Amino acid sequence: MAETAFQIQYRQEFIAGFEQRQSIVRDSTTTEAVIKGNRATFLVADSGPNATAVTRGINGMIPARGDNLQQPVATLVEWHDLVRKTTFNVFASQGNQRAIMQQTSMGVVNRKIDNDIITVLDTATLNTGVATTANMTMVNIAKASLGNGGVPFDGNIWALISPGFESYLMTNVAQFSSADYVTRKPFPGADPAWSDQPGFYQWLGVKWIVHPNLTDGGSGLSSEQCFMYHKSAIGHAYNSDDLQALAGYDEEQDYSWARCTIFMGSVKLQNAGMIMMKHDGSALVAT
Image (tube, rainbow, N blue to C red; front, side, top):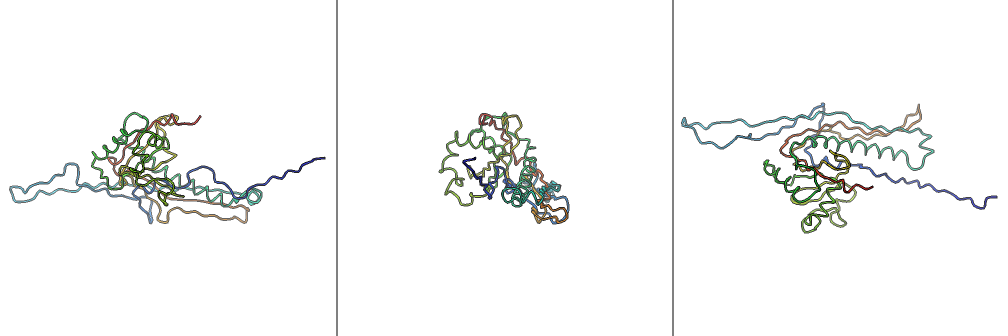
């Protein structure tokens, strides 16, 4: 005869798995909401590389010139994530399965938004050279390259870095880890806006975003492709009603579903406004 009859309790409130659920990068780009159509044309306007002030000619006329106008196009593509579960599976499974479907679907599409933008950043032709661990020299090269290209440090400069890049800055650059230099910081009590949403550091006139899904151009994070760029260097277009998140139930086949959809596209606007910081984070990979 059994002396024990142990009971197993299953927690009904689910614990979200570790994955990026929100778009971290979109706010660092120039966005355009498209009312109707599959293309968004941006306009990049400047005076041109050879424009200089002139004096009046001997005929008494002021020589005229034209402006340099470029029209990069972002082509919108439809992206979806659809989850489906039978009523029996919803009934028999632990936790709120319908809420799980909606949450995971939103996460998949938000990650796609960032991936779309990162794919464009990966086309940057300026870079800091051979991949090395993050240091002040790498940061200064990136800043100087943007400055030499005439990019204004007007509060719209962003840096998109990996967790490894952040760790090396924290360890090796005293100014980055000091509250005397970092004016916005993701630490308790520093800024209420940091909690429960993507945040950034404000340092050296640059907004620093830490992202878990940047491209590794090598292997084992030996050549992570991090970036410093101006908001006007990248365009991102999406349907005017933005991300669509729906859920429903099919009576005939007796299943529940959750779908998240967005129409979007990204485009490089100004190559001079973006530089790739090649970072070697391989020493920080857990084994």
